[in-house]
Length: 126
Length: 334
Image (tube, rainbow over the protein chains, first blue to last red):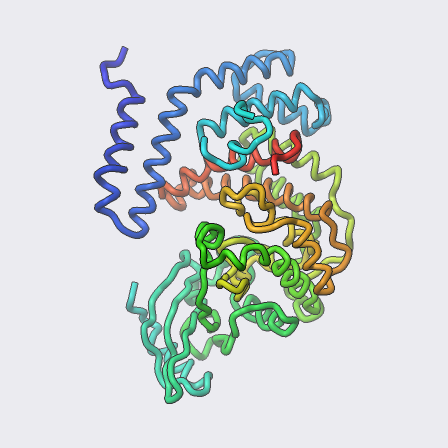
């Protein structure tokens, strides 16, 4: 077991340093990249918090959908193969539900304020 | 960068080629990558100052930025042809030749205005322009598509099928599973347009490449992705949600409706355009942008550009995935 701080606390500390202390000192392209860096660390923080659960849920849905086991990468490769070969129809309701849930979870980690997520008819708040 | 070693050669070329200009001042680099640069400067003479732009690729670096980018001389030719059919573009008073010793490229007028989407979509000075922009974009696109193809026979012909295959190949190269992209490819493949009525296409008609003033579009910029293709491609591209900058309910660039875009297109002589054709290319455009995000990430992964921006943009690919899910699996909230 690692000592404190947790990985989440560490990336949060670095993000806050960039936002509160580094960015005000920077200009132009470097300031832009600092903002991107802070946003990237915010993604890492959200992934540390929510990634394991959403990956587990994704794998569980994929196992049911595909009727086999494997790593998340293997399951996703198999899903892609079946879509390409028409073994799963693109309008299959179970596929539609899975991809919708998977994508909502991904964007909630990557870009939680993205308009396509906030205004999605599938968004939990709707 | 404020100094340029080619400045004396540029001044010689310009004072010889453009009447009324006897010197150049204020040469400064605006943007550009390793192979293509954009410079701003003023041409001065007895009758005053002419604001100008130099688009340039240094000698020995004429490899286009992307496989699909056209050479700068071709870009200049297309801009001049578009001007003749009534497209608002910057005037192109001079195309560099080898004897100028500046590189390859061309000189164009520097048009004042705004290209930043968030300002165009939110600032009060554009409030009167916004409701008119979709129809105006439709009219402009009809005029771009009216350019005589015979005069641009050196451009790549990219049929819907060819473009589909091109992006399929790119994604396969990355060898990483993207099931939402797979569904989009399948959906598109089942509906690929069979139109043989291909026209000149701008290829990147969206915010950032439209110079806009309080009265509307002043100039269409950045012609480097121009090609011969399905004209609906241009109308669909500006409807991609990524170019709405949060104004999701205004499908066209965050400022207007598809109905106005298509109506403006027909008004200016554009043929057989329908919301359905536009929708196909909006979905294809969304997929393309998602794959482009992965391509930009690849420049980080391969070490070509180790910037944090190139790394992080890979995580914007999922934005296009939620857009595709909304488009393909939900009545999109509009």
